[in-house]
Length: 257
Length: 184
Image 1 (cartoon, chains in turn green, yellow):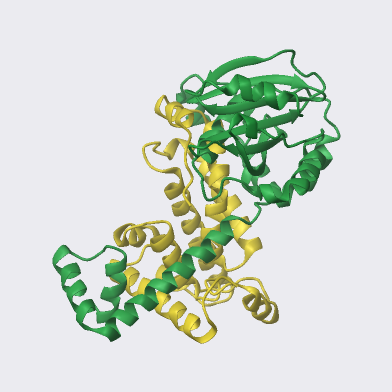
Image 2 (cartoon, helix red, strand yellow):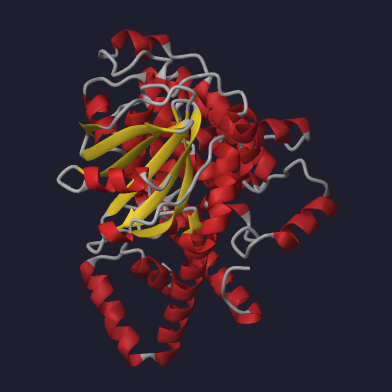
C-alpha cells in the first residue's frame, strides 16, 4: 500500500486499529502529512457536495412512467402475499416528489383534466411521504418559506386548485416551505410546518370535484391525520400519532384555505 | 442522502410484499440510481437510458430480489452489469476486441468530441474526473460501500478500489488547489 493511500483508507475506516493508531501518531508529528490528509478530506467534502447537488435534479417523468407501466414479474406475483391495495390502483401514486421541475408542466396539463375524484388511496400515500420527508431536516422542503408567493402560484397552477399557505403560528407551527407530491396519480401540494420541538406537521391538499364532507380523524402507520373537504379540494393535516392538537390545527387551517 | 423506507413498506416487504411496492421503492431510488449511472456513462441521456433498462430488467426479475437485501444495492449491481455489457458491445462494434471489465468503463459515449469538451466545461469537478474515479468515489465516499463491497460491485480487486479512491481524492484536491473549492 502506498503511503498516501493509507491516508485515504484511514479516512474510510478501512485500516486495522493498529494501522489507524499508527497513522494518527504520524499525523501528529508530520505537518506535511497532515496537510495532505486535510487536502484529501477537503476533496471528499467537495465530492459530497457535488454529488448531493445531483440528487436535486429533476427525474425525467418518462423514466418514472416507464417503471410504473412496466409489466409485473409473474413469479413474484404468484408468490406474493395479499396486498394492501389492488395491484394497479394506488400504484399509480408513485413517489416522485423528487422530480419537481421536470414534471411540473406535465401535471399542470393533467390537472386541467381532473374529472377524477380524489382517490381514497391518497392518504396512504401521504403517510408514506411523511415517513420519508419528516426525517429530512436538511431537505425538508423543495421551495423554502421565504418564497411564499412563488409557492402559492406554483402549487395553484400545478395542483389545479387554489393553494394558500395558512398562518398556523397561533398553533405553535412555523411554515418551512413546500413540496409537490404525487398521490393516487394526482399532484398534491404539501406545506410543511415545524413546531417548537422541531417536529414536522404537514398540510396536504389534492384537487377534487367531490370534496369530502366534514372532518375525519384517522391513524395510518405512525401518523395521525385529520382530513376534510373544501372548495375544489380535499385537505389533510398529518403529524406524529401521539399529537393531540391535529384537530385544532386542521380547524385553524380550514378557516384559511 | 439515503432513501428512507417507510415502516409500511418494510412491513409489506416482510409479509411477501407486492410488486407495487417494489416499483414505488424503485422510483424513490431513481435520483441516486441516475447519479450512479452518470458516473458510469458520463452523459445524462445515456444515464437515463441505462437506469431505465436496469429498472425494467429488475422488474422482470423481481423474483430474484431478496427483500432482506437493500433494493438500491441490487439495482446498482444490475445497472453496472448492463453498462459493462453495453461497453463491451460497443467495443466489439468499434473493433477494439475484448477488454477486461475493469478497463472498459472509460469508454466512449455517443457525444462528439466537441460536445464532450463543452459538456465537461459545464460539469462539476466531480464529473470532470475519469469515470472509474468518480464512480468509485461515489460508491465509497457517498454511498458508504466498504472497499470489499465496492470491489464486488465493480468487479475489481480491493487493492484497486483503494488506489482509485485515493487517486480520485488526490485529483480533486489538485483541482481545488488550482481553482479553489466549492461547488461550481
